[in-house]
Image (tube, rainbow, N blue to C red):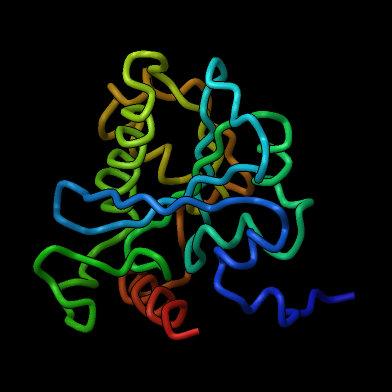
Length: 202
């Protein structure tokens, strides 16, 4: 039976999470090239908080999606299961996605804003996210566990290749249905931009 979107799933993601008995914090992360991203941190209402002796877990959505991909439709989604198991769970939002359409100087209606590719998502967005999360731990933690879906997984591979010192900040990379190469597309940059814009409009 195909999945259907309920009225509950159409709510603001924070409201949706709250109705499930969880809290969703919003954190602002600014990249080297001045894109303004929103990261989400998931926790359980009424709990004593995550076990900070464990590696935090960073979940990265696939192309054309957002952090909501890990949060709907039910608490059987991976993010909730990890929180219930005591982990500190963070959810990234790449530039151009629903919750990350800001920039310090560029207007997201302009062509210049959308002049990016998976490379920038990896080298600038992901690196900023990793550093931001680890900074919350001061010197308690110097690594996190990364889980990426499709192009979210590809971002970790790209970052680890272009900036190999980030390998030391990742305790592991779990790649779910990893996608690295796109074939059969005449212009992947245009495709990415169109997908991102359609996501924002929904």
